[in-house]
Length: 329
Image (cartoon, rainbow, N blue to C red; front, side, top):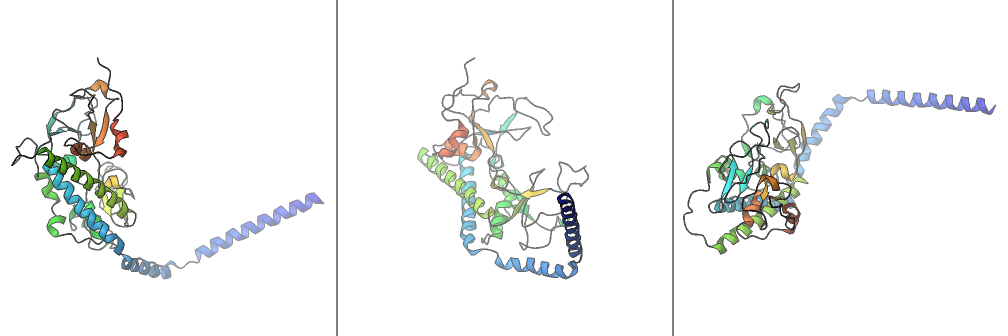
């Protein structure tokens, strides 16, 4: 009897589970999405009334000021501190002579372990430009592929600050194309002598502004949505990515150049551009044999440090300040 009771109980439970599942399926199928669609669209449109958030407007304005200080400071330091960039890859070296490490991989990363071909660097080698579409409204319709030329491209940081409520003049917002021509090379003589104390002040001011810039962008990204493609460096500031088929990594695949969006971070909007760091106990020219011993540093930090700026302690681990020197061969 006990066995029959257990069999009957299990049969009743299974029948009840099937009944509940069928009821859920039936109830979900009865949802009238035609009636819900206007409600959802109204909710999305009313969301724009909450932006921009007033408490984040000073943060956006501070980011704009910090970006201008960084750009001006780096342009000034490039007239004094020599910067070299590789002709065939994105490698950058800050110092009197380019290093001799064989880390060049060419334009399309089809080679490896090749020596670099050094040429004079410019502003874009230190401050990597990241551009995004300039939207008329934050919650506007998605940009289609055939609309990609109808929207201008502006720096992604300024677009983020614009959507956060910062008042940005048009001559600053659309000046991104002139940054590459601000400092073409660092072999030119400065217009006038710059004293070491002045250089140290410019370097420290630029370094502090760089830290303020990255901190401000981090705060804004907690409130305002931004997207970055998983396969390329395309950035879109807004609640959803655009539909322009510009992803060149997999343009011959099934999605035909469509971006695969994910949440963007501060390094996507303000890249650090990591370079090799020469310590006092390292050789004057970094060689390939000591690659495992040398440290690294962000390009802006390395540039400011070489004129006497104080480096924050959080970079000491990356720079291997107290690390060993490579063995003498």
